[in-house]
Image (cartoon, rainbow, N blue to C red):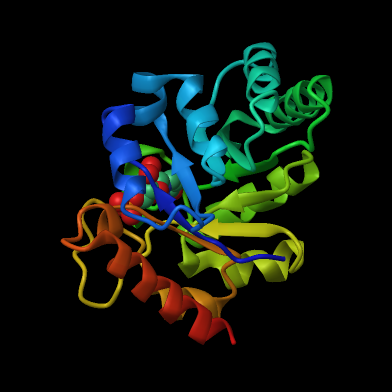
Length: 240
Ligand SMILES: O=c1ccn([C@@H]2O[C@H](COP(=O)(O)O)[C@@H](O)[C@H]2O)c(=O)[nH]1
């Protein structure tokens, strides 16, 4: 299984996202994440433009709606040729199964492989107090995340999005082949920003993360290519 370092392209326009990518060698074959900001600004064309440059796309729209709506939206996403996409586990097993059905159907219509469906467990910006007080979920963050991983697996998802802090417990609960992609990654000297459950690339590798998502530590670095390469080196070394 490949273990990508996924760059979160959190930019307000297509021009800014493409200019950012222009800094990398044309042969870089990156894996990049298009989230709500860029997709709402630039639409499906930005997925096509970035794919045409040879990069793999993770379309992170975090769907959470009634099952029929999610299934229909996932059918559209399935036609785009992305590698990963996301849905909120909190939508429940009926919605998650509908998401998977839509994704598989949409991809089949275009003769494509279905994207990997990853369920958001607890956002990495959520801490223990927010879980208990805001969401009124009792217990630990880890218990909630593991519960959502089990629900996602039983509902046909391919993996989850979680903090690297929970990845070991997830793999114990649902097995090592269930994908755990981890945002909230910060090199040792980087600011946490709004992230609450962070880990370094080395610690994430040691815990068993299947892939990192990194945004601001790369996109806002004075030398983004160097920042990306440093994280890839740290991650690869720790995975060896
Ligand atoms: O739980 C989650 C789910 C998704 N994200 C996304 O990852 C990146 C992280 O960006 P940073 O700048 O490295 O904090 C961002 O696009 C989020 O939407 C997440 O952080 N946590």
